[in-house]
Length: 251
Image 1 (cartoon, helix red, strand yellow):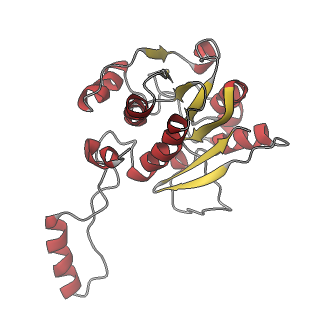
Image 2 (cartoon, rainbow, N blue to C red):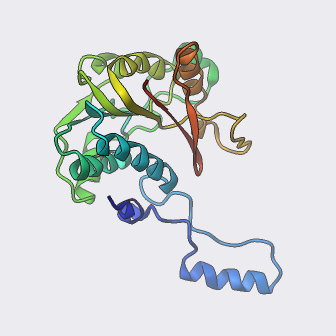
C-alpha cells in the first residue's frame, strides 16, 4: 500500500523550503548570515506532522495487513487528522474492520490530582467541534465515519469499545485519561495487536530540552509506566518530529 497520501493531504509534507524560501536562503548564505528560512512546523489544523503520521501508517497497516483480529480504535481524535489516515488504511487493507472514534470534542476536562499538579493543561485546551472532525473527512474525500462516540472517556469507555481490538491509537494527553483508558484497551487487544501512544516522551531516550510541555504530556508517561510495571510488554519510543510517540505490541 502506498503511503504518499500522508504527504499530500493537508500540506503535511512541509519540511522542504519553498521556492521563495530558497531565494532568500541564497541571499543569506551570500551575506554570511548563519540562518535559513523553512516552512512553519504546522500548516493545517495545528495538530499534525508528517513524522507522526508515518509512525501511525506503519503500525496500523501492519495490523490490517496481517489480519490481527479485532477492530481499530482511536481515543482522542481532535479534528481527525490521524482519523483520516486510519480510515484510509482500513478502507484499503481491511474493509471488514470497523473503526471506533472517541473524543469529548470539548478539549481537556477540568484537571484534578496529578494532572493539576503538573500544570500542563487547563480546562478546554485543544477544544474542537464534531463539525470540524467530520469536515476533515470531507476534505480528505472520505465518507463520514459510522462509529463516533462523543463524551468524556469515563462515560464512553469501556461501554462502546469493541470486544476485540486490532489496533489502537491512544492520545489522551492526561494522566487521568490514560490511567482510565489503558487497562480497558489492553484487556481487549488481541495477541499481536498494537497500541500507539500519541505522545510518549522519555528524556532518557530522546531529550528535547526546548520542547514545550504540551508536546511532552508528562502525565501520559507517568500513567503508562505505572500500568506496565511488571508486565511482559515494553513501551518503545518513536521519533515524531516535534513530538515523541510510543507504542507496544500485545503478547
